[in-house]
Length: 567
Image (cartoon, rainbow, N blue to C red):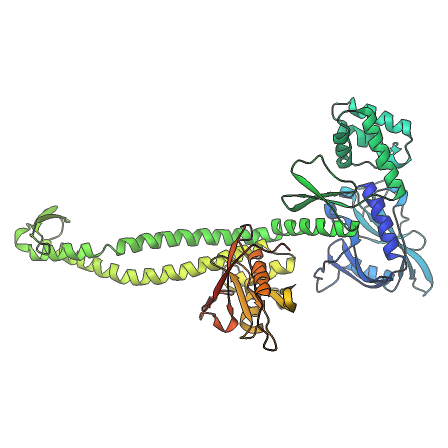
């Protein structure tokens, strides 16, 4: 989902209007190549995200809060030095390229006012973030490009900045009617028109080309008209932000409605910043789960597999132990029939004195042992099985609790939103003994901030929702008051939800139902149409001694059946 030239043009207009004369208060870099500017604009405070992080490169206003590293990187320090306290003069798209230029009014080393610029190049592998001085000299950049990498256009501090070289092509926004018609004709006569059309008109992306070709249905005149209409809307600044969803999840975005993707739905967003915020936030979450959390998921999955195999073996042993009475029965019969059993026999036919009618029965023997030794061996095996049954029941119960805990950890890993969430789960697994504790010399483990999800409920109530097992423990066992309402999905991993009740207020049915819907949403049953959710007072929730984080028992509860909340 890279930003194409037309979308960037519309985004530049939007940001230029929103950020003109905005003052830079703070600058952070939560991730490499990603800078967040805290601004004071006429409309109020806002946050501008500018990223050169490969395929996730973009620039837009964001509502999301990122977690910042303890030590800011060097590029962040340079951005603060040169741009903090300055004002944004303009946001432009130079020469209709896939790049944005943020012009700042800032001060130089002598305290004089000078115009500096931050250039965000969004060109695939060449995506970069470049800080320019008043004379166009490169002051800092995210990716240093030397002469060996690019002989014609090195990007290094101290060198003059130069625009990327252009291809000899017709620019889409400057093409006349005959050029558009000729491009439509040549594209439709080719074997792969969706590849040919972007090669004829610079600035037209393959994604938009496929949409226009789908609308044209092979008609040259109709394709030329679609091209002309898109061009006119781009020049007039009337392109609109459209989010493409499939199965409810964001998969792409565009500046026109998309109709050629099967099973996809288009949703018009309020502005391009909101569009990119939603799309890239979901992409970042998926990538975080794929990269950072995948190792932990494998660890948990392996632990679950080992524990399930162990429990299966223990249950089989328990089933065998529960059949131990036959051993004692046979040993008693051997003892009672010693006079009738000869040494060395493999099978003994004896009278069963313990059954009405005293029928004969056959008992398998070890021919190398005497009848007395066979009976003693059976008695000893019976005693071992009797003792093993007690131990096995304890181990199976303990293993069941541990399996339940691991499943809650596996669910928590599917809900992580940031690297800090992953680190919190990593610490939890280390404390549980599933990972080795990191030993960073000179560094103490950074305490995890208590930041449960917060939701407004009907009738003025509020719901707090834990993000992990550790946070569930903190929320339920330490932060909640005894009269607060506690909610959790029945019989499945999920978040603890607390409804604070202050000043003697009692929860209303509408508030309970919404809180239960939130508990259902943040559970492993969130994909089901109706989910049972138990609720009770916090005073009825107890944590067993030695239990893992998030594991509790509760009683005197009620159950409500709700649909998971659509958040």
